[in-house]
Length: 484
Ligand code: DUC
Ligand code: ZN
Ligand code: ZN
Ligand code: ZN
Image 1 (cartoon, rainbow, N blue to C red):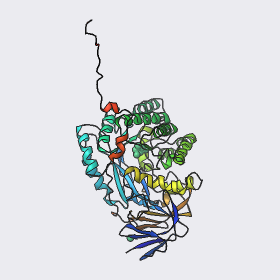
Image 2 (cartoon, helix red, strand yellow):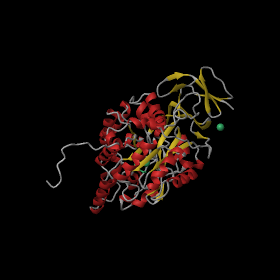
Image 3 (cartoon, rainbow, N blue to C red):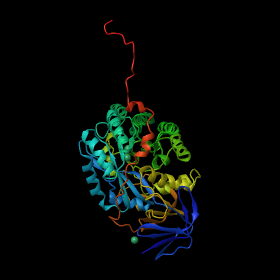
Image 4 (cartoon, protein in one colour):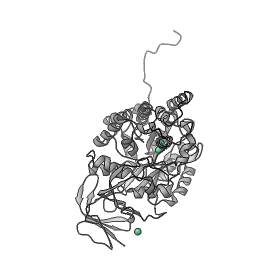
């Protein structure tokens, strides 16, 4: 059965024009005026764009003694409800666990997905086995991105020697390195001191992770990536210091991308000083929310192109889970939701305010992500042959965000009470209409895994320290005899 999206305005990362879209077999079959199909979806007054891709989620993530509550079932429903048609989640090996075993676990969990998905691999420990398995993960499993936690000391953190070894291996295999950039040693010191001095509440979480720890780690990761000759993707860029390092690297021709989150763009550190413990703890995530100076920097980065994509780091814990940290902020599970709200929040605070054009909006929510992660133009595009992952966004439709109507399984929403404009009229996942004006008709298990192979061509030009990979001793004459 074919479908046609009629009377809308197509917006891509580089073009806005009027045309209909014919969909057959889950793919875009034709784009042009006056098309007809078995079923018609009326997009009058709407923008028709590639479905959102969230490059950063943690669904049912084992973390800080619990599991994040949104899983591939509730999480991907929330994604679709908000106009996101693909998520990229992090497969997380336990220390010492094989990467392929971790992947099996993630493939088992994701069977319920309502939209398409892919995985990044996390490098949580280092050894010969990891070195060997990276090749299989990239070449056989279609996962080309590997994240390194520079924070969470004693748990997920890897040290610089491990990171450098891993980066070099990725350079060789055509992979992309990713970093959670915070100096884990300094965070551990600051946290211990704050606790010792009686600062136990959620506000201490923000004090324990100042922007300098993120700026330092981002600079370090960029330099190590440069020495290894690997492209680097910096997740959840939240502050000017980190953005500044990314900007500088990009100006120098390095392949470095920064990923601000919708939470950091729109919520600030005052949330942690709310006198309601639950309110503050629900917003504990790493990095923490920052002040306006940092928010302005992130917006400027999106406007100028020095920051490339907008994600959520969706890692949703219930209030009950957050309360594990009563009396000790270091035990509050780190993470916030956002999957359902990223698109309307960015449209409202980005496009409606004039900070982003609709084309730039499509670039940072979808197309840039598909290109960087190497699944373009299957995803992130309105082109004949692309998957029919499509968001029909009605710029006139408004709502007030509230947990009482969300698809996410948690009991609150960090954007509670925010008025947003720009909501889905339709959301299609590979041709299936999953959302019609707020009504969900998603299908459990509809989602398919998206392979993203390595792309070595970009790596070859990298590294300003080529000599390091091919050192030669200098031939000298007149060497003094020893002992003289
Ligand atoms: N930060 C969070 O807040 N949650 C999940 C992992 C992370 O890095
Ligand atoms: Zn992180
Ligand atoms: Zn994360
Ligand atoms: Zn259908």
